[in-house]
Image (cartoon, rainbow, N blue to C red):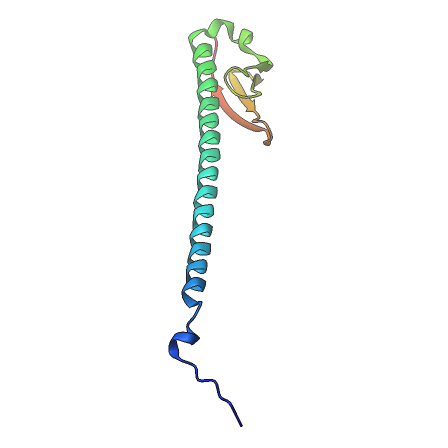
Length: 127
């Protein structure tokens, strides 16, 4: 005697809804993790952008001071002056490679990150 099992449509579909729900939860979880990762990268890039803007501002401040006091330009030359109150691990260097030309370099380093620098050149002639 050959017994055949008769399958009903409902019996063949048992567990399909549970499987679909688990796959949906997996896809949703991956999406949430992607958004969290994107937000973390965005916060990091925003902080780096702020430090670059601050470095440019600090350099322009020094150039402004030099332009307003052209008789004492030599007094503004400096090497690795600590500006860590303005930038994390920050230093400022002002050099004069040729007469009338000044190079201002701002460096900083966030904890656990590679060092960054901003360099600008200004032409200033003294009185």
